[in-house]
Image 1 (cartoon, one colour):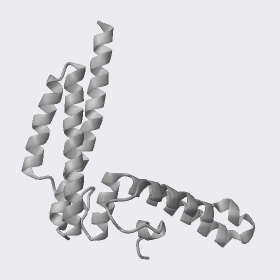
Image 2: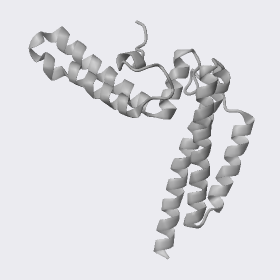
Image 3: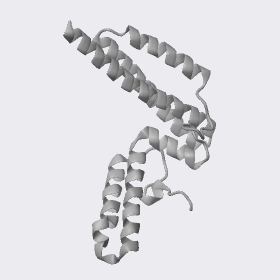
Image 4: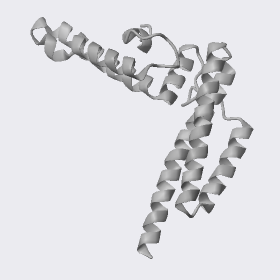
Length: 176
C-alpha cells in the first residue's frame, strides 16, 4: 500500500509554504465529507473506511499545520529521514557545538529579559532555518534541507527548555 499524500488528501498544493486558513478550511471540509456518523447505515465496510479516512485527515492536518512536522514529512516523502531509528542524517558538529553554547547561556539566565532574549534569538534562528529549508527543498538539495530540519527541531526543543527553565526560576524566586 502506498503512503498517503497529505497534500493531495486535503487538496492543497505540495509546498512548504502552506496557507494556514486554506489548510483549516480543507481540513473541516474533508472531515464533514468523511465523518463516520454520515455512514452509520451504509454498512460495516463503508463505516470502517470513513473512520480510517477521518483518522488520516486528522493526521494530515496535524502534520501540515506544524512547520517542523511538515518539513520532516516532506523530506520523508523523498527518502530523507531525520528522526528515529531509520534516520538517514545526523546533527552536524556545528549544531552540537551551538546547542552546548546555548544551554550554557540558558543556565546563566536569571532575569526575565535574559529569557526573553534567548527566546527571541532561538525563534529567529528557527525561522531562518525554516526559510532555508524551503529554499533547499525547492532546489532539491535534500541534504541541506535535512540539516535545516535537524536545526529547526533543536530550536523548537530549546524553546520548550527556555520556558521550563524560566518557570522554575520564577518559582524559586517566589519561594524566597
